Length: 477
Image 1 (cartoon, rainbow, N blue to C red):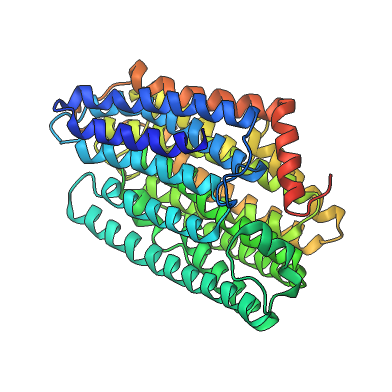
Image 2 (cartoon, rainbow, N blue to C red; image 1 turned 90 degrees about the horizontal axis):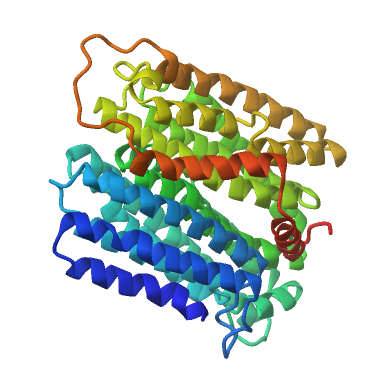
């Protein structure tokens, strides 16, 4: 049944290619995604045994990423129906097919227990996202697409070298040559130290560039800024989680070896550097979609800091992965609506969104409060747990820097969001077709509701799954 997660979206992609009508084609997306979500729920409730050879297995980490991506994609596919109805003049065959192929690839990332297969699936996500970023077919979008492809492909190529080094370390150590995750974890301490160390460096750089960790984040502002809001939501909330899962697989091997402490220290530094970069570049952003790119850099930094702290912070880091994914969905979908209403992303022209698009403006404002760690939203809980863990471990410098960067980022982001939402509507505003409507407002509203619920109550099945996933990383029970 696990293969259905991969094959069903591929079948849907073929179907979208055959449907001749732009409006009807979009409806394939929610039908397939809802079926995918149902299969995901079934597998999470009772995961089947590993495939013959052990290449395919759905463990707790995979379940978290699969669930988050499936929920986000389902909501985005519902939004896509309303969004594409406003853009019927632009062909959407490539968009719809690429979205479903991307869902297939992200599902394969979640269930892969062979690092070679995982690498192939991750590269597939990179390639299928390129035509989505280029959807607007203008000079800026093609520049963003090339930058995205170049940097991410170089990163993935570096990760491939890391996998070669990891495989070669088994040869030098006179072990069975394999990239199966359980075998590598079990024999991690016996791998050749030099080649193992080189593998960890290359894998961290490679997967870190795909995640957008600073200073490997330079593709994000252009890609997030030029892609449709629908695509930005999947980039920031879905693709980042796939790259993070790949890094978590490396983390599992590192913790099982003798280099776990060093690997965590490097992650801690990279996480804080990412937060620092976001704090600097988020200030005075005149493009509110590019601002969200730096917010993404911040939050992958927050998760990486949690991984670097280890122990109890691992639970909080995994919870933040889910919280960030859902909240980014609200931010990108609502800001996509605002972009359509104003036909601009510049804060010079986009003012008073709460008056022109009341629902989208309110959602954008609420999501801003959530993503900056304001109670009672879910990111506040995970960020509070990470800070508490830092101070609880006696790592006061990390805790203090963490809080400082959060404060600076809040101020920088507020300086952009508040005028966009609460400012005065320009008198010479260009008239556009878009107005808030149920098809484009209800999907982000669903996500916002989930973010609010998770801020006051974490369901017991999710709590158990988070603890199981943290245990796989060496976290405290």
